Length: 142
Image (cartoon, rainbow, N blue to C red; front, side, top):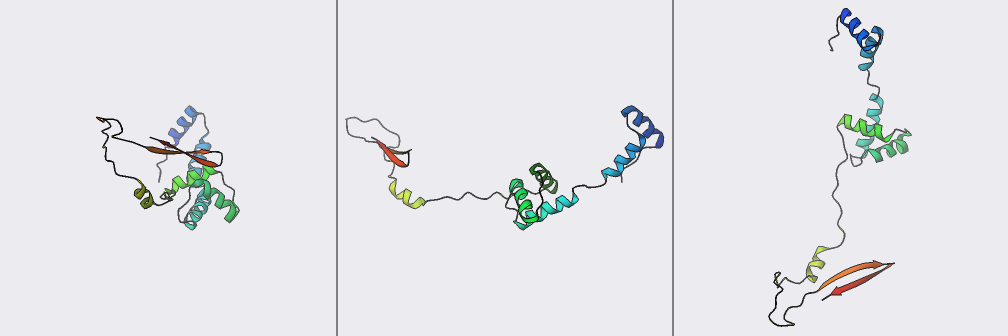
């Protein structure tokens, strides 16, 4: 438990800081009470219910949807920090197949040696796609 100063020390310190002696003792009493105990429990329950997938913004919404409790997002964030919990980082999903793209790419035979002794010995090409309106336009540079 916290060490309380002697009566004379408290009286001197209260005069220096401009607070009453009873205010100091009320502060000590208040300090032991966790006002957010119920809110911490509610946030932790919602966090566990959704298996830790979501961060403070979605937990705030799920508190409102599931339990009808409106809590400021900053408070949810603070309570999550107090619990030491955070959302799990999920891997980004990749769309498309890599094997089909690997088949279309030809081998690098020039190996960045673009000098040629005669014209038409070495040709290089690249294709770029642009979206124009609702259509794709392809540009092939040779």
